[in-house]
Length: 476
Image: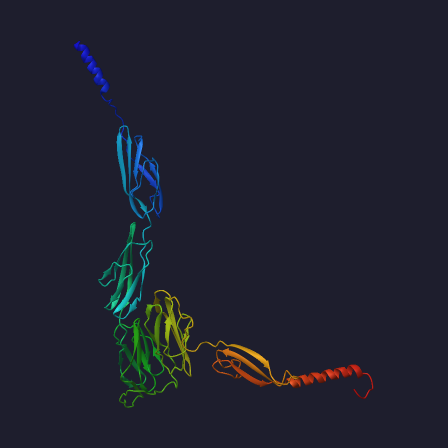
């Protein structure tokens, strides 16, 4: 009996005991394509797990999940995303995770502009972010120890110098960095000063001139008073005729210019002659009767946002009587000190052509005016500086005159009309009427009656010849 009970217990225990089985647990593996791109980004996920899993649980990192073995998912937002896969089989489960596996969106590319980029202190500069792909943060370094986190900051430079400017931009998918070396130039216009040695002596007199100007000029124009000039910094000039000569220097840099006349004239004498005491003031040294003109000019400001109004100053030598300015934007001027407005951003060359009674000269300053900013909504298309080129416009009407009903084409007629442009007739003929181009009338005599009389005589003679040309009749 006891043996029977033990056997039954063993059987029951065997039936209710769990079946112990062993096998390989899964190993979660996967891949995706593409793993980066512009959002919205469609990604195909592929299960590569080992151990024959029977369930899959995907977490795409943006709040979305899936239980499909090989799902497809679209990332709508920009950013980096972790992806997790959990697989199970009869023997266990496995978790696989890839950190920042998917990048949806394009990294930004840093870029910027600024204006004005040069000027005298204090110089206020407006910076504009031009970065691509919509960055969400900005870090500016203005090169003078100050920074900003604004997208489009305005900064004031108070000290002279050249400054590097850098910008770091960042978005959810990356960062970008750019630096512009020596981008901002802050300085002062030159203060011209002259040194000369010797100041007097026998001809031929060789004089060494020295530029002593302050604030670092980079161009020089010397006038030696005898009709000769130089653009060297420290020229040497020889005077071959006796006389007193006034020397002037125009020194210029990107911030402006200044002109200085040597306080004591250079005195050149014939060998053996006593050296006169140098004088100051106007002199008329021997040499050319009319000094050849030498074109030179300055302008202020040289940079700024559109619309930028610039005052130009003629600094030419040589008794100039005519000026022609070309501002580089299609506009001209014919006055010595014009003011011109640039309505569109860009870099402009400026040319000055001058003449006097004897000859002429010209000067072009390349990339002289720098206009930043955006174009105005309604720029003035009619703006001119000085006389405009001659463009004749006119209309006219001929009106028969006379009050005789039997003679509608009387001996007087009128011409009425309107016109504009230059009142002088470019053909050389004189014109009458309003010289300002206003409407007006001109009366003149037309020998209409005489013309008709000649025609009638010709017709009568022709008829007489037809009728009596071959006969001997005495009368018509």
